[in-house]
Amino acid sequence: MASLESIGTELVDYINSHYQSNNLYSYVLNKVNSLTYTRTGLPLSTEDREKLGKIVEFKLQFGSDKNIGDTVYLGESETSKAFLDLVELIKKGK
Image (tube, rainbow, N blue to C red; front, side, top):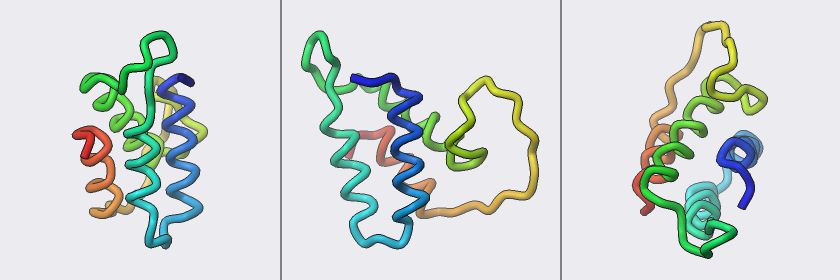
């Protein structure tokens, strides 16, 4: 499995380029639900789903090229309930 940061970047890039797609939620959730650990083959833990959700939320706010811990400059942002709902679904695993 790739790092959570790289998976988060991939998901945000997909969200940004397909935000009008009717299949956005199902694609992202299927992608997350299919993730497994390389060594064990087990699905993501609740803790890692939570981390991935936070990474996606951060990258949606500040850009997919930013990582948690980077210095970012706050500017005007737009709150999107649809994206926040999707982040919550990523965290919960539904």
